[in-house]
Image 1 (cartoon, rainbow, N blue to C red):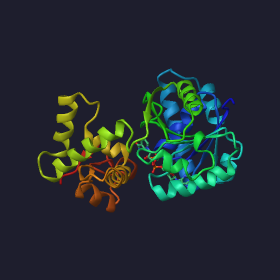
Image 2: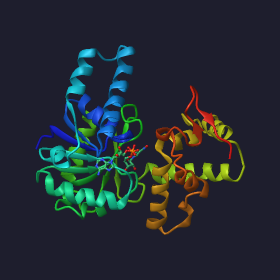
Image 3: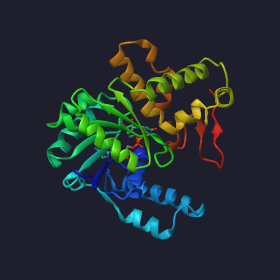
Image 4: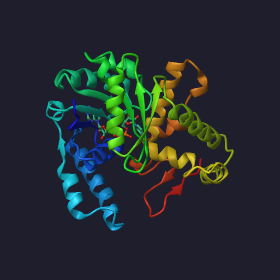
Length: 293
Ligand SMILES: NC(=O)c1ccc[n+]([C@@H]2O[C@H](COP(=O)([O-])OP(=O)(O)OC[C@H]3O[C@@H](n4cnc5c(N)ncnc54)[C@H](O)[C@@H]3O)[C@@H](O)[C@H]2O)c1
């Protein structure tokens, strides 16, 4: 089987990035979200990101037009997946939502198609089990921002076939990404380290150990991270971080993964990071302004 048509579920931070790189690699893409405004925002982000390349002379206007022409935004799930060879899901990190979506997608998608989740933490085996094709179900974990970051973590569930792994490895390479293969475990390889590290930075803020900007500066310069953990938290989305932390506690049965109370409080306030205009920094001005806690 050759993969030609890809359906991307979700037009948010990750979904629009995934649709972008798939269309850029020549795939026909349908990008699905639940409201027109989310599709419009996703398409506008793709256009803006492509136009950055135009300014730098890395891409021509004709190429941009061709890439955008390969992405069809759709609201109907059936329309999105009915002729797909590969479905990549990037909807919110909520177990119940993912399971109901996969049950539906499995029913509406051609039998030959591969189903891939961009989940940050949720069990691939658990999602695969609600479908009739667990051998063609896999984790395809991209990093944010997708057009920039060079890695795809490929996650093999209990029943995932080796052939499925190979096909996803090929697609990832076509998207210009390096891959690592990870056997299923909560958080896979990267988030198992990253999420406790970010949470520890938030605990330190909560305890008054350092200010937001000093904690970021310390880790950036002291550990040579490209950005500090609180800037990164705002980038990832505090809601997503909280879902992952709670999921880790449930799965590992180990309180060392618990979320700081401050993180939960900020999510309840709707201060979920960049996408909301406010998180550990306020993004309403020209430069992000750190908050005091
Ligand atoms: N943010 C990150 O850095 C990051 C990195 C890797 C993986 N992920 C994972 O990617 C997934 C999406 O995260 P995000 O940061 O893009 O979230 P987001 O909130 O930016 O986007 C999610 C989008 O999904 C849409 N949506 C909700 N229900 C839907 C449905 N049934 N069908 C289609 N669309 C639906 C929402 O309207 C929203 O536009 C999550 O599983 C997350 O864990 C996130």
